Image (tube, helix red, strand yellow):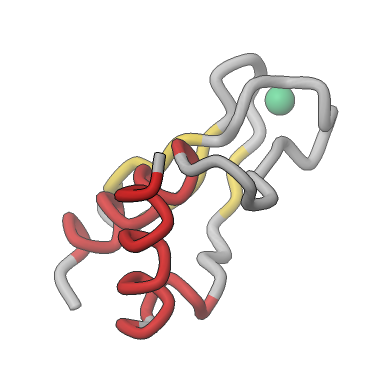
Length: 76
Ligand SMILES: [Zn+2]
């Protein structure tokens, strides 16, 4: 899967209602993490501090999960 596609999936997930957003590992009251494509691949960054998460959960590579997520979004 292309890195840009993974990034888009994470963005969609972070904007979805009713799912547990990916949050900062330093402080969970910080804003939601956002995806960025770096040389090493897709990472998750905190908008409020220098927290960087390089682990991308497997579900973002799962087409079934993304279909489900898009289904959720269309209900909003
Ligand atoms: Zn943070």
